[in-house]
Structures are given as structure tokens and as C-alpha cells.
Length: 101
Image 1 (tube, helix red, strand yellow):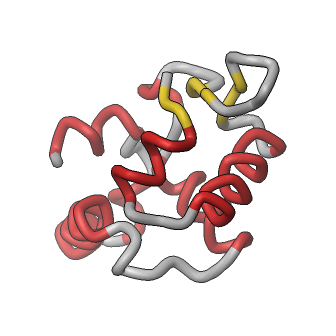
Image 2 (spheres, helix red, strand yellow):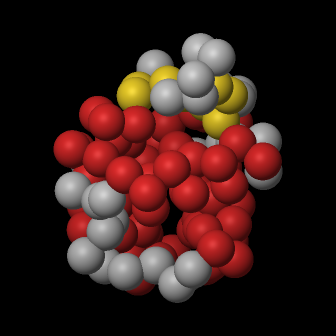
């Protein structure tokens, strides 16, 4: 589980922006709050069943991604796209991605 404050510190993103993203991820079924204040979350399903292509598609619906916000993950996704094209993301899970960075 991660708290909102931990995520803000790790990503260097303002609290209000993280809160917006977390609520959107919760509404989309990616996250589950684990306390009554909705300040700590866990993934709603195993990381090996959450596909990067689905998360990226979802994020583009919220706002355009900035490389400043996701440098390490962005670099990994870019490298994967360069090597395998868009189809390379079809089976890439969050767990796979985290193993690479």
C-alpha cells in the first residue's frame, strides 16, 4: 500500500494533482482505497494482470502525459515501443515494467 503523501514525495507532484489521478484510477477500477479517509491505496488486481497499454490509454483520457512526470517509466515504455512497435505493449504488464526499471 502507498499513501498519497508517499506518492507525492516519490513523484514530486502536487497533492491535489495526485489526488485527482488517484480518484480517477479508483473510478476506473485500477485502485482500491484501504482506509476510510481514502489516503492509502492498493492495486485492485495483481500487477501481472494490469496491462501498460490499458493504463496509458486511460491516462491519455485524463490529460496528456508529460515526460517530466514519468521519466523512468516513460523511458522504458519508449524503448519497448522502439523495439517492438505498439504491438509490443499488448502483453506488457505493470509487473513486467517494474522489473525493468
